[in-house]
Image (cartoon, rainbow, N blue to C red):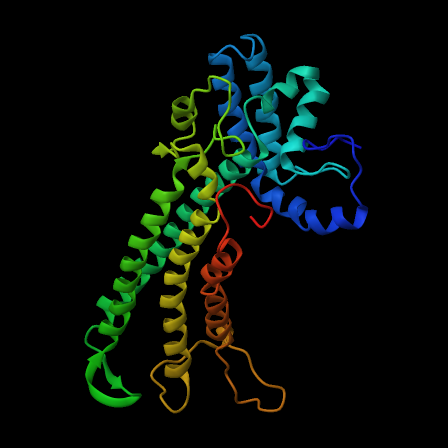
Length: 323
């Protein structure tokens, strides 16, 4: 069994360990390639300040690339008895390179490794969300132009109020996404700051070059204050969650309208048969399940900021397992 990074030779009750570990190992798989990228930047920096020998660096980088390939292809696994992704990467390196592999942890704590992995992961996911929203925006804008002269009743209090159009309806949701992207951009800016080098929240005695890892990892800047780097844990996730909640609110409202407009009482839209479900006892039914499930999933997303706030609420500075 591999030794845990925090292990000081005292056994932990098995039930306590199961409770405290939870689903960490499962979730860590999502962070594997980001953990490797962070390690590549870190060892490159360590070599520049003389903590890794010049001839050791290419060996470490080569092996880290191999591990990255495994993670990218979905073949990376955290073995039984290995606590987390950080320990697994170090174990794989030491198997191949011996004690050289142990040097990747120099000047780092699992705290700033987790912070870095989460920021790299969030940064990638924000980009994917933005691309998906851009695709939806383009569709809504095209439909707004296509149906600009097709009338649609405008409602207040769910009563017919004034004449409107499908073009206006589609365009409203397109513009709503534009506002949502402003909030997503803000979450990107907060995410795109380098925490590496903050260690356990109080820095390192090694002469780490944090600007170098900031540049290598493509961050706009860094979390300059090492205490704040740890204080930002949960804050970054909450900010990203708020941005996602804004997008979810827009799409949820769109889904609600779609459900309402396709019902017989309104009849403004008709879904193709392949996009609906039926009923075993009412064969005439064409149910908009896709929009209903979209609405439910979006409403779940809108609860995320509150969940994160309740986890980090009233925690003082420093690291706690709540995080």
